[in-house]
Length: 159
Image (tube, rainbow, N blue to C red; front, top):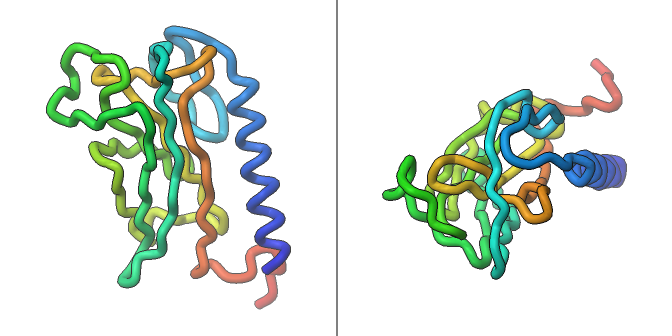
């Protein structure tokens, strides 16, 4: 168990380092372990800067519930694909690089989406036109991981 906790910490630090090295503005091709080659635009956020954090809660029945804890940000699903309003919009949650749109602070991840021994969860804040909000050209994001308890001892492959 201690090994898994250390591995999760290393994975989180590596992911944060990859994100911190990503410095590009406006239109660009984002190639990283977070998002599997997708094209997107970015919008530089204005003060007061929005922020996001992830809380992962095991669901009593199945899967996990993700709570996006935001500051200085308002979810406005009724304005998707309309004119951008600063610090408003929706979120994208990437599960192992696969994008899901999120229109409120809560999102449920089914067990079937957790296909890896350690599953990366990345959340970004997005404007109405789906552009990622950034600060100093870095995405406003939160990154976490969920261990798949059903895959077993993946690091010591005993049969």
